[in-house]
Length: 196
Image 1 (cartoon, rainbow, N blue to C red):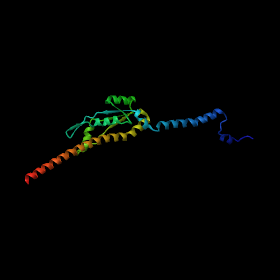
Image 2 (cartoon, helix red, strand yellow):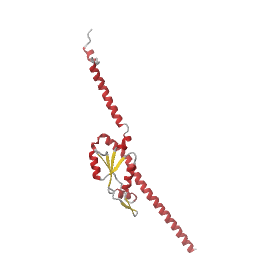
Image 3 (tube, helix red, strand yellow):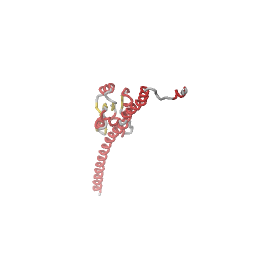
Image 4 (tube, helix red, strand yellow):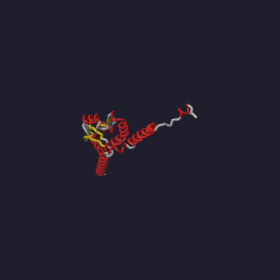
């Protein structure tokens, strides 16, 4: 009994061994590619200490309460001490060249007026401190993903450094205020003794 034409068309089973191998490879190769991609993207944070990053400090510093401060130096020190990132401090031209060549995933630049803006936070006319982050567009999609995931961590590190600086200054100011109040109390006691 001969099969109908429709039955022959719907019978997808390959007749030869080569056709079977091709079908199996067409199913297995995409699975292997997907598994490899997922493995490479699984936990990029654990390889971050091996990814070179650059930091450029162009901060000129600012006068704060009679004391000259370069807050950018403190921020750079904080970034260099982070264990989960591999920062290297470089001049601007070397960092740009390294970024262009692909030696660095991204470059963090602390601008010239960083300290000035940071010091202005406790004045009547505060200006927000800014840090520039540049990455190489040719670094692939992973570079952009990793860079965007690191921005909040960089913000936290920089904010922590700025907060630490101002906490120290506030405590110093409070200690000075306490000494001044004690002297004023002593002076008031002397005036009271002189009047009484």
